Length: 201
Image 1 (spheres, rainbow, N blue to C red):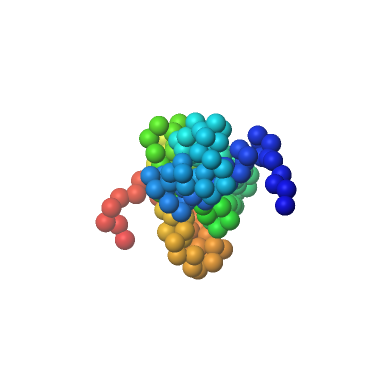
Image 2: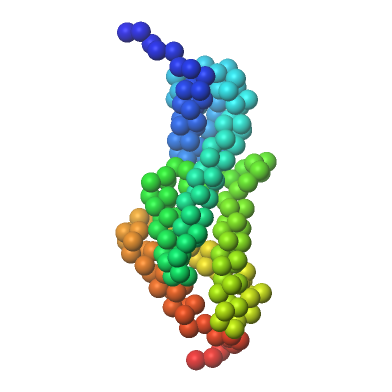
């Protein structure tokens, strides 16, 4: 049987796919260049040639996952009412967890210093987007727009932490989880007080 030689681009994509699986299974520290080469069926120099080592491969994978997740959630937050945006964002994030599990695992569990962006910087971008939307809505309702960032942190934090929990649980179904997140967030926003105080019934 004749082996078909891959083009440089095809080999690069193969190594990215192999690396994504390996980093998700073994973590950054547990993945060696030897492991990557073995899984790809190549010699170690091939990995170095394309990425300069596992750090370069890892950085490319992180960048791709970040962009993919950012586009999904930002699109979800782009249109609709407050409630629709919360629903869309919840489903988008949970769908990413469900369909791109390896990518999400790498983003939330195995961040390494030295990469330009991290999951936390991505969450900050989501907070900024939600904050801008809430600020406009707050002004129209006579609420303090400067507090929008505080509420945005709470909303994004609730969604992110629930998604990380669901990564391991996978029960109940993502639609049920999303509905409960929306229930908490929307009913909280709908009955929001201008000057809430602790200890009030």
